[in-house]
View 1: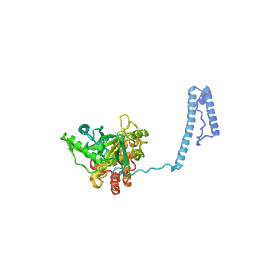
View 2: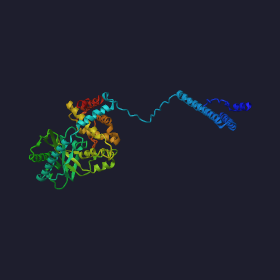
View 3: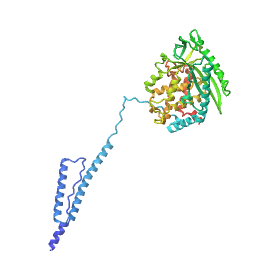
View 4: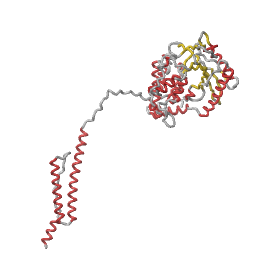
Length: 473
């Protein structure tokens, strides 16, 4: 009996499982795998014997211990592999990036000293634009007064004037109607066209912007203004001015200003509440023929607005405005096309509409016009520079930065800097081609010295964070 108890105690004693050494290598060899498999079989055999000879509880404990040991071996092997990989990465030298000489690197302009943080510059520009915004009440009141006097002048010409009874619907142009007017609605431009179907144009000068006009055969109310076959602009302007003055006599609130040298407009002024408003009424000839040859290389909007839009623009009539200094000279005008481009300025049709994304083209133009105005107030030598130089610069830049994504409203600071740099380049070179007539240099009037001086001031403002704009806030 005692022997049987001793035998049972011996059988219940845990059998020692031979310890399996850990494998330090990253990848096990075939021999190691075979050895490991053999050890697993031995454990299985021992476990089976125990299950047959002792109670199930003890046998299960042995099996769990053996399985746990095998898992520990596998875990040690994985940890050793990870340590080896980590050591290799630490020893390995970092790769030097390749210098891709085939990809040109465009240098970025250094940020202004006082505005290295874009948010700061964005705040300055945003506040400036807010201060330049015209109130809706002022806008509507001014527009109502302008529309009333303009309609009265056109009705008077059609009813009481023999020479100008064929005038057509007024062409409203200028910054107010292009929606780039700043500060207050105090300046308006209206062109009153007389249509001519048959004219002969002869270039005056060599830049393609000025012409003498001759009427072809056929009765016309303008025949009396001809001299040696050429239509005299000065005679037409004189009579046109007299007719406008007759009309304005019926409106006591309006005054006709004296003639300005070099200005073909009849300027009227009035007050709407506290705002002094001026209206330039300009007589012009509307010509429904092909555009002059000097315009063939202009209006390069194919990548910006599209080739079809350009073709449609060139089918529009063009206008001739009297140039007062030359008695028989007329200046070609494309104000109607300029207005159309600014009103529909996106490469995508939905730009700045409810269904699309807003851009900052117009805001950049407003800021440049405002900065130029401040610099002109500071230095009288800049008087010959005008907002038309700013607008033409924007048109040229829109052709090279043609996509709406280039003018995202969120990129206002960068886009404004780009416009200023483009303006500086033209000023430094002393050349700003007319957008429609590339052979005409719009900066020939101010002169080289004034151009370089203005370029230096614009650059100074840009690099110092626009102290002129900040002083107005």
